[in-house]
Image 1 (tube, rainbow over the protein chains, first blue to last red):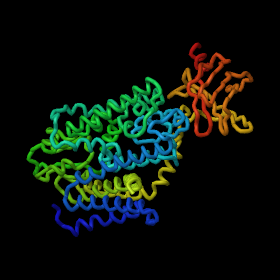
Image 2: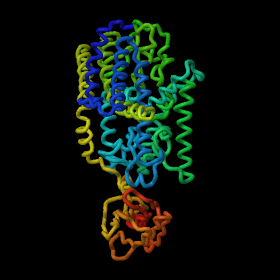
Image 3: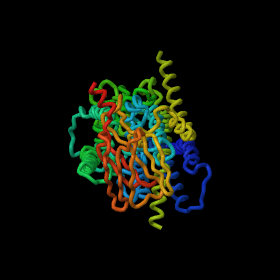
Length: 374
Length: 157
């Protein structure tokens, strides 16, 4: 326990004020009761989680709550928006021709080569102004990946929450041994989808692989090809997002498939924030290796006091370490020093990002649920 | 050196924090600026290509777009031309299209919008068949598959 109630409240105050401005838009409007309650619950919930992070000294447990709620809320918002405009979760040829497909950050790896050579985006969405437009998502991802590196995968990605949620359902792992060789798989997927997308000018990952099509939108099943695609989406979602995470307590889709995760892994080299291991305190119990959901920690790495670039700074290892040897850090600052300062800056930055990014979807979901109940 | 590294790390971390702080208030400006980048336009394979001609009639406008053959480095051997009917489309659409504006119609297209059936009569050897024919929010759109004669000829040479 951090125990200092006053200090924790003081740390929460800036987050409280900033999120108040963003969630209410600076001008609270209480004319719609459902909207007002949804805003109030979101605002209080988000700030309660941030306060608890400071008060208890634990990070991952409270981050995961917001992260998982964000994943569910975003899918709810997206699906309800799609159903409202199309009366179905599936999209048709007309939606493609009219460029009405919502854009998500997973398309980014596939648009880089075609954007360089054809000076255009190979996605049937809107550049600006539409629902989930391309420029907005690109900018959000770019800023997050520069500042947080692969932290985006645990503090921003609205799909990661699905994986994260299912990986927490069982207390004990059923499958204990998985070769961490597979953590290089996203790079293979990244190369494959980037090249195939460049050659065909079709976002192949979205078209054929993305497991999250199962919880967002998918091509209308009108042919054998579209039926096969739907089968692939559902099978991959079932196996990589639900079954394997439940059995391994690891984020299998994020670790072994996601091509954007591979790019974010590379951007971990740029971000100022990192996880540090204080070898003076570490007793090599390897509890951190066991709990790491993304295979970022290895016994060899722990021996050398190093965390790999696969780390998403979720804080699970930090919470699990009984010796407080593993902690949030800033590059350049030696391990074991300025621990609180580093944690406070990282938490404020990353939590502010997810709080503001997720608030709209959470408010929208709560409002819809309240309207449904009352 | 150690101190410089520490100071650089702290400055970079604080800059990151400031970037997140200013990003959300300036979000609309940032995304508006991003939308003006030279590559920020949708590929013609999705938009259907630039408009070549418009033929306005009483209730409906016939829009013929430029053929789309674009590939990553050079034009492809096959592509499509998109035709849009905007406005109050009739139950039966019958049109002849001269997409290359050489004075000779390239194909005739007839669409039963109630039955959602489309018939194509190719009058040019480069017209291959119907790719897509679908109702849209603005009326109807059809994509007709084409052979890229220029590309095929250049390969022959």
